Length: 145
Image 1 (cartoon, helix red, strand yellow):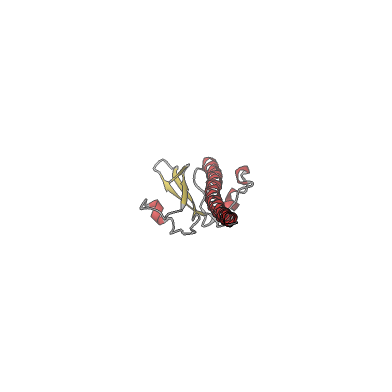
Image 2 (cartoon, helix red, strand yellow; image 1 turned 60 degrees about the vertical axis):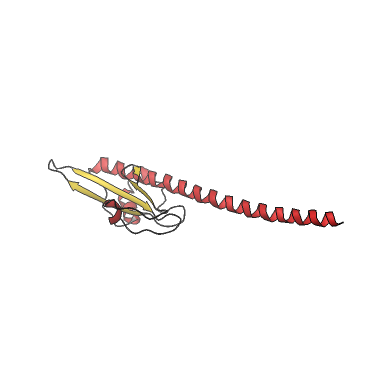
């Protein structure tokens, strides 16, 4: 009987440990899945912006994602796009168009997610390339930075 109690206790401990490990691994997996989903949405938004640049010659000027969406709404590329990342936070957007001597523009744009930690310090830091917060995801001119 002593051995049965010991075995029962070990089985209970094993069950608790397996629950803990399954929770930890599911959390890590879902965090990675959210990151990948966020990146896919950012690429779609970037493609719509790049098509806008091709059509108009410069990046759309908008103070937020709602303004950006309204500028892009005539584009088929924006259909079905989310204005929020996988954590439910609205993406951040900014752009600048530098006028060239020949009359056209050098266009740059940035789409950012505050990521899982929901911390975003703003675009000035990124435009100047002075670093970024851990967890932030930034997409600019066709690449993640």
